[in-house]
Length: 189
Image 1: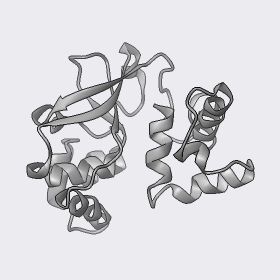
Image 2: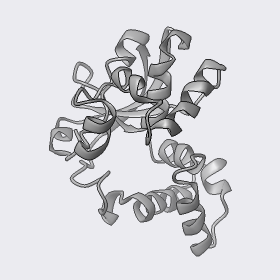
Image 3: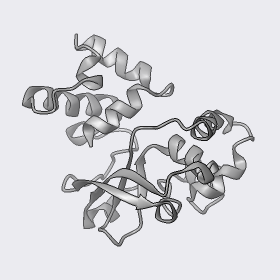
């Protein structure tokens, strides 16, 4: 999950500079994120630290994304049908994805109607990329268990573009999902 989170964010316009700045401070190459040795305990520890310093993961709890986020999630690669995928919800971020973008539903399919309105027009680039067949890194989702509701941890822009162009999606979408009953305690679930 840490590698997938970093890989997606370091390639995004919104977060790239934050990661590059921290890598530079730590005198670490970008390749530790882009081309990792996932068998290296030292590299894996650094990637967890990097995610902590930039986004508040684990012992570096700060900001909003990982506040009260449980440490006991079990992570899996999973395959969702298109119908299941379109039911995935945004994080419960009141001033952002919940009310402003999706008008309270937390569903990306509803947010797609707002893409042409400022300040959401930046999401249109994801929509255009989906229509052209671009493949994105897997979304990272969380849930209480296999039958629980799915919430996006990482990939809000991508899921919005994908929902907007849902007719272009494959019938099966690969994701990374973490399960824990304790996810209910996460502020954004």
